[in-house]
Image (cartoon, rainbow, N blue to C red; front, top):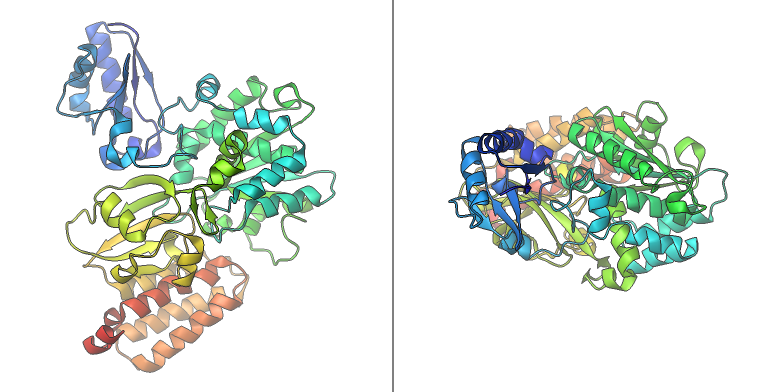
Length: 519
């Protein structure tokens, strides 16, 4: 058999568990057997407990094997050559694996399927249809469709994307910018990285559509330095898009100009806040700016700027291709469309799961994620990164929805879910949140800079049973000050993990058992 195409994920998650060595072992085995093999380093499909998941292209579709070790490579290749594909690690059609089959993949429709560095492969799988439609309509109509779709920011508070775009479009200026916030720093989050490493052209297309819609001719992708794989793939994809006429002075031969650059951050968590990110892009120390003025009016270099995160911009192409009603039909309430949810921590089936808003937290953790990897009971789940609230099992009926989570004193954030079993010490988790804030604070505002340090001290006194009642009241007051007095969400959101731990797990702070039961 000749011309065998084998897909071995090249993204960071798969590489971390040996995918690069597996790809080399398959190539070596193929050379020894005289088999012509085309090894494609695709992105991960997000079934991380099965990585490295190797896929073999056949006449009837792909056959997956996983998790494949170096010692399995020769046997997997032999099974692929034999055509029947029988092997103990054979998973069959990857699309039929329940974890993948039950998803609603819109943003991640091509991730794990295409060669991330191939413009031709992207176009062959429906890429750039959204841009073609955007170029055929007035810019105002593009903004209207994004507004009608109900798309909201996928990185924090869920601000409506269409409103942000319209503000920039309506602001007169000689230069405007599109900035992609790819400074993905929340614990348990990896969706941005997966898109950049597995389907970068969808991000490039989304940013190009945004530029056309608001009149911007230059875009920047701000990526954290901890993502070398994503940076390399993005730069290769941008170069390919330029060669293909999809970026530059004339996008697809149209009068529209738009180009992109990748800029690498230095690892400061606060640069995930949009105004600190802008300062960093301008070559300054990342410091939070007071608002107003909003970045939509005076952003990068003082010019009107659209700042969206990776998932928001990567969703734009399908909205333009299928129309706003198609996207709006998914979801619930004011949370429309789908959310790529990341399952991490002490969980049996970690990975990315894209589904429509409305699925409950319990379904995500126990039905889809399979409960804890240790087999012990789930005790707490943190949603929304290190600044997200801790949810106990009693709140597992809360639907994944911006408003529902806000009502439960939580936030969805970037869609990261970190699971803890019954051995977790929630007082220590609360202390960590304050300590994290103290370390990562830019230092510009007092509630965040000083409040987080005092917070660590107060929690230590509570744990040590020193004036517990007085110090608990002091901690609540301090959290209230940080929540409403901080300049940005770093200090403003730190109270979420602290207060949720104190509220739902008071026994870990030394409260009497009867008090914990009563609460």
